[in-house]
Length: 406
Image 1 (cartoon, rainbow, N blue to C red):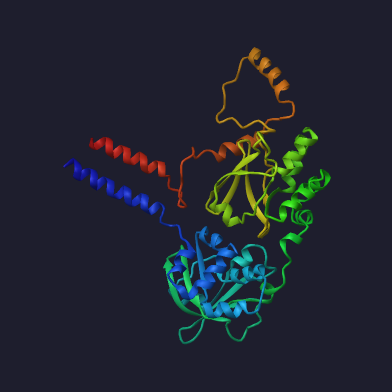
Image 2 (cartoon, rainbow, N blue to C red):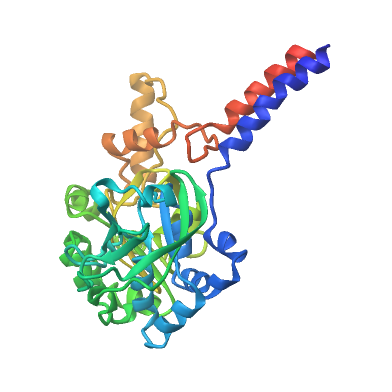
């Protein structure tokens, strides 16, 4: 009898654990069973769009067959341009076959990854979806210049997981003058000018003032990812920055970059410890990348900063805006895990003397910094799925069932 109770109690728990991880999808695995889309799948991988698709919670991918891709490749576009064009084929919304055939008022406009990444200007990057007479559905980028007839039509549904991912086939490649516009190589980008024009002027000025431009430029040739603090965040931090020695100021600046390319999709997938340009010898100068759904944070044990925008994201260069200055433990005191009891006056005095001798250049985190870091660790290290369900809760339930039975 107890075994029956155990099995009946365990089955729902196993189903719950299975459901908790069932929302992940892999676009290249989906397309692997359809060889007619092999070229499309290949270019999703080499342009890093596959990683971006895999970490979107709600997505529609408009695949085109090898013949349509060959027409695109015959135009000899650069890889960056191909990425822009294929980004038009990925919608930040769910469109299954049924929804396509009953769009409100016969027409709707949806945003694509081309618009979401900031590469498109104005209304470029949006796609019109139209329910045409005769049961057909048409797709037209808003700036394609093809107002009379759609650029492509719906062919068939490949896979549908309602309101998570829909992969459909369309007849032709979607494109537009904006998507096809020549793009300069990321290695030709003036990184400091890019920051200055997009809300990170203060950090750009620090890089120039401390002669670190050459270090950033050298690493750009092989891959570079920069996390630049917003102007307001750096402005409030400057009094503490000025208290550091010249060498430590340089280390702090270099701490905001890693020596390889990481797209936003890769950061969402690659949680873990990362070395920085400041890493050297016994001084690790590393931080941890964490994500919660589409949000990505950088955790340094002193502070937790959130990525708030993308300045550029094209291999081999990615520059992301963060809402706080990144503070390494090599230069700043780590935030306490929990509030410590207040020491007596005599203990406080002796502790203050020791701190002043041992950490003259390591001002502790501000109240705001400490609060932010404590907020970021409230999860207690438990593994969470995209739906927010804690795996540790599942195991707690399992232990309860085993205890009740045995």
